[in-house]
Amino acid sequence: MLAVGDRTGAVLLCDATTLEVTSPLVDGEYGTTGDVTFSPDGRLLASVDEDATIMLWDVQGRTRTAELRGLKEQENAISSYSLAFSGDGGTLALASNRTITLWDVRTRARIATLRQPLDHTDPGWGDLDGVVLTNRGRTAITVTTSGNLRFWDVGRGTITATIGAYAGLASRDVAATPDGKLLAVGGDGTVGLWEAASRRKADELVLSSDEDIVSLAFSQDGTLLAGGNRSGETGVWSTRTGKLLRTFNSESGGGGTQLGRAIAGASPTSVDFSPDRRSLAVGYYHHIVLWKLP
Image (cartoon, rainbow, N blue to C red):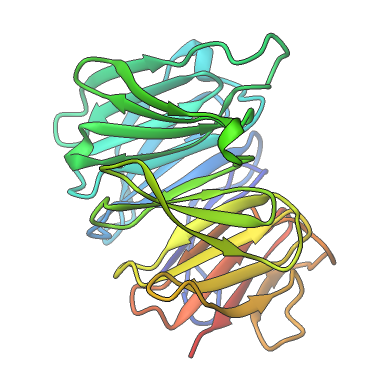
């Protein structure tokens, strides 16, 4: 099953093989769906709109189970909205503008609010571009439009480390393996692999152009990483060897299944693997392409 959110405000569940829409959870009438993400066990779907309102959905029953309100300062995000569950599914985070809010998924209670320092006085420069949760939700890791990678102690609400743009970051996304041990952070045509515990850069993966990597995702077993850049190219690497295994462009001429109207050179807004690693979904502003993997 594939979840889709779009700029009309729609939230859709689609068949992961044919991309046929099977369940429209929200009809697209107005507004924007900023992000959608499944819980690790696949039982819940979280979606967020431009008012920073999160809907939790029971996937099997196709019913809305909760509504979580973000803060006023998180509405109408200049850069992006980013949702993330912790690896155990117990914590949910929303990052937008300069604020991260976190909830206990079981009780629906807000458990923390993190506000990041001002990286720059220009609107949108230094805003949050991505968030992941590790260590059972006790650690949040964020990237900003100014290229800073930050590690947060959620319980204390403090920053424990910052790796700045001087380290070669020009990130527009961050991803973590399901066990939280390995991070992927995008740069100018490269993806840095970082050990989460030591904060040491373990490897650097290269795509063919020097365009910013704007979307990242690991497979569920952590052995594959996908990353898409601003020119519409998406690569798939082995995290064990660092080898680039496949590349795809923004059109489906190479045999992918497509939903929507393709635009050449469109930048990918999201990438995600199927649970069995046999397919990769790449979302763009106007279409989705589903690619088969070996």
